[in-house]
Length: 148
Image (cartoon, rainbow, N blue to C red):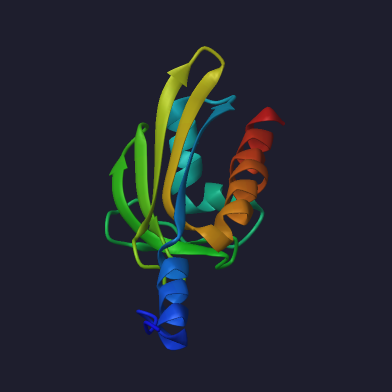
């Protein structure tokens, strides 16, 4: 009889490593009834962020600064800003292996702004909640803010 190549401890290690690195990406476009400059300010100007989120926020549109939204429910680091056009952030997910990067590009649209969202390296166990958050809380609240 041939011995197995790995024992129970290694099986657990394999599952643990796979779980740490199981990630997904999410991409979607959202139509916001406001100009790209207005949307950019709503996403980067702290008092306006607090208006449309209805909660405490910390935001400075400077690369390298930390940010916090919804009173700490979302935290991370600002990586890049292109006024009126693009925001790049790293979102923190505990002990996630690869950085989770959020890129929001703002495109002019006849009805306002087409916001192109790309969120990479979302931990698998957080994916459904993150997608729901993007649709309902983040962009849903922003769209409602400008539609009112």
